[in-house]
Amino acid sequence: MSDKITVPEHIGIIMDGNGRWAEERGLPRKDGHTRGMINMISLAAAAFDRGAKSVTCYSMSKENLRRSPEEVGHILSLVLEYFEPFLKVFGEKRIAAKFVGSLELLPEEIRASLKRTESILSEFEGLGRTIYVAIAYGSRAEIVRAVNEAVRRGEEVTEEGFLDLLGLPLNLDLVIRTGGESRLSNFFLYQASYAELYFSDKYFPDFGEAELDEALRWFSGRSRRYGLLKKG
Ligand code: FPP
Image (cartoon, rainbow, N blue to C red; front, side, top):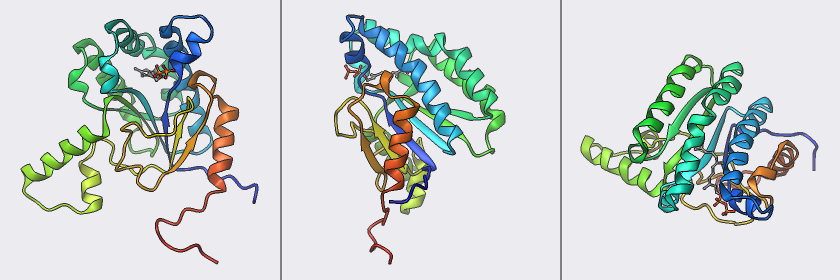
C-alpha cells in the first residue's frame, strides 16, 4: 500500500460514546457531552487543516430529543457556551458554518444563536470550506421533506437534483463513527450512498488527531469504484 494520503473532500462524523466516556470515569453524562463539544471543534479544525473541504458532525439526532430534559438541555446549552470558541476557531480558518436538521424543534434562544453563527461566518461562503452541524437531525425526515418539496414544485427530479433539495446538498466521501457501534443511525443516508464507512471503538472524546490520521490512512487505502470495475 502506498503511503500517500488521500484526504476525502467531505468527512462526516457520528460522535458517539460521550455518555460512556463520562460514566467510565464516574462523571455525569453531561461532562462527556462537554468534552465532546470541545473535541468536535478541534477535530473538525484538524480535518480542515489536512485538506477536507467539508466536515459534517452529528451533534444530536431527532430521536436524541426524547432523552431526559436535563440531558437534552445540557447538550443544547453547549451551543450558547461554545458560541465564541466556535466562531474564533472557524473564523480564523475562514470556514463557513451551516446547521442542518429540524431546527424548528429547538428553543428560540438556540435557533437564534445558530442563525447568528451562520450569519457571522457567512462572509466565508464561497471560499469552499464549510462545517455542517446536524442538530435535531434525522435523514428520513430530511428525505421526506425533500420529496414533499419536489411534489409541491410538481417537477420530476433527477438524482443530482434531489440532492439539491436536501438540507445537506453534498455527497459524503468518508463517514467516521466512534463509540464501537457499526450503524449509520439515520445519518445522511442519501449523501452517504457511496461513502467509505470507518468504525472506531474509541469514545468520541478520545478520538483525536492521531485517530483522525489513522482513519485518513485507512481511507487512502480504499479503492472507490462506485459500482464500476477496479482499474488496472
Ligand atoms: C452521542 O453519545 C452523542 C450525543 C447524543 C451528543 C453529541 C454532542 C456533542 C459532541 C456536542 C456538540 C453539541 C452541539 C449541540 C453542537 P451518547 O450520549 O449516545 O453516548 P453513549 O452511547 O456512550 O451513551
